[in-house]
Image (cartoon, rainbow, N blue to C red; front, side, top):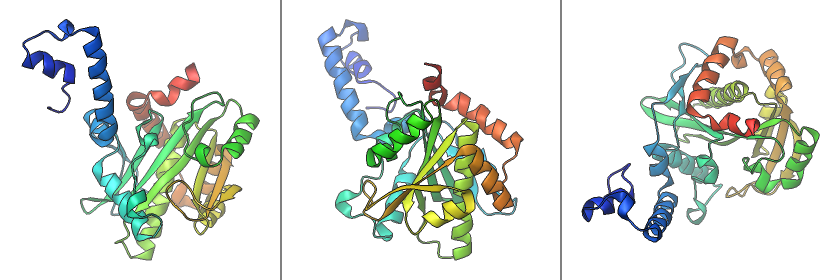
Length: 282
């Protein structure tokens, strides 16, 4: 079947029928088959609706990477996630489901860092509006009680989780790795700010949580022995977004984000990801 062509259209063409001539029962069966096909090939389905990546600003003009908001999940991102997590010893072959349902939500934004013509880093920003909204954050699956407390204390808040961070393990230069990691976090902060987020969360390995606490002002909310498919000790961190912006910009000019950049990113997200605001309007 050609990409973008529905099963109904193909059957109608093969049997020289109008698609509307198919019986309601058959159309229902076809719709179910198409849904199953999308589940088996979520990358292809998301890519079929894709557009060109949207470029983000980099912290320095001479920095050898390109940051972009992707139109959807793709094979390069999945391969990088697997490569990074498997090399770190966080997953095994049987557990390597590197693309999940959260990648497909209209309230998720994917960012990629490219250098030398290849993807070397990625981060996902998952978002949710209001305590009555459907599950939109991965950490709700692992820390339901703590997220319920956050939502109860801030019932009208729009929440974001920075997650699925991966950096190419073949990059061994520690300075470059650290700057690349910081650039991805800065990109996530930019996306969240442009999306009018009130509270940010991140679930990270205990060995990395100090970076978020020291540089960005996150506070520890909870801990666990693992997080989803990653069987490593994890800290759940949270921060009010206004404090995160103040703390990160004050701590290091690297994290400064101009109003002009925020507006430019916000305009793009309103066009490409209207689902980020639909829940708030309901």
